[in-house]
Image 1: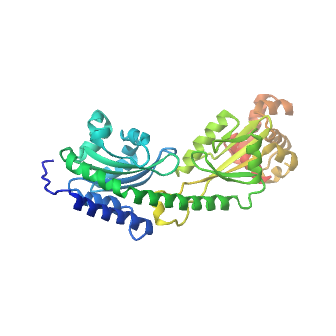
Image 2: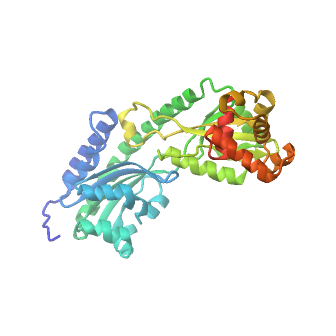
Amino acid sequence: MGQHFSDVYDEARVAAISTRLASAIDAAVLATGTWDDVPTVLSDAFPGSFSGLWTMDFADNSLNFLSLQNMDPAFIQSYREHFAYINPWNQYWNSAPNGTVALSEDVAPARRFASTEFYNDWLMAQRDVEAGVGLKLYGQEGERITSVMHFPLSQADRYGKALVEILTRVRGNFERSIELARLLRGGVEARAAGAALVERSHCAAFVVDGARRVYDANGLAAGLFSAGSALSVRNDRCHLADRDADQRFGATLQKLSAGVPVEGTSLVLRTEAGTWQVVMAALPMPAWSPPVLSLLPPRRLVLVLANDLRLKARERNLSSLAAAFGLTPAEILFCRRLMLGDSVAEAADNTGVTVETARTRLKSIFQKTGASRQAQLMALLSSVL
């Protein structure tokens, strides 16, 4: 506010800044610099501004990389935790073609958002930085990489024109670095998925991300996908045949892929073709990945195992449950019916007891095994048989 800017951004200066910025991008790729250096070059070259570079994955609703320079740390933290997700410019950038360079005053002036929380509590709460210029780049499906500069509205004509030219000149450097990152990330993810499936031949096993995209699958899983009676793949995304189970499946995948602790990571899927126990486990993130991938980090993948409970109940001797948990013969028979896909009422009918007795029996089984839900019991029985 009230600052005086006297520097002239002529061709010579624009060319010099473009060269420094291109060098910073290339250095980040080669690990002789970091991605933080890229917005730093811009904020240093335009006094009174702040610069940012970030990667948003809208499929997972996550901010995967953020670098904001010349900004108070509290505002950086609040953007990371909240304001990135309600930024009203997201709508414009999501619809803009890849490689778009735009001045906010031309496409979406900040004053249009004057009634929003983002405008009042974040953008204008800092200082006079209402104008901006940005570059939109495509990461992969659902991902957007954005390089943005914000500066005083009074400098829109001088800063804006220069910044549009600079970002246009370095766009190729950005695109080459992102293409390399995509290739490297694909290799890292493929290796992680393949390693997770090693020695997983006893059941259907496959690897997905939080958006249900299938990365790899063993032969049994491929057979299930092909049959489509329990699991199917549509548009490269996995779905369960039962709607309720599929909703729980999707919600659990999103949490696991975001690194959010999940209490229940297994569920029971009942179809006409059988009863399946589906277990999910987040794979560990790579211990090391190329520095260029900090801008486009590998996704957190999830291993999914699907066991045919009816097959296990037919093939295995449940008498081992007596030694493992102290279950009575009647409780073992009840467990067999549950593993065959019976509901509690159906198990009661098939074992000749009332529903109330069946519920009491199930409660006793829960106490002896330490399970708290039927899906957890199925997973436990499957693991010890």
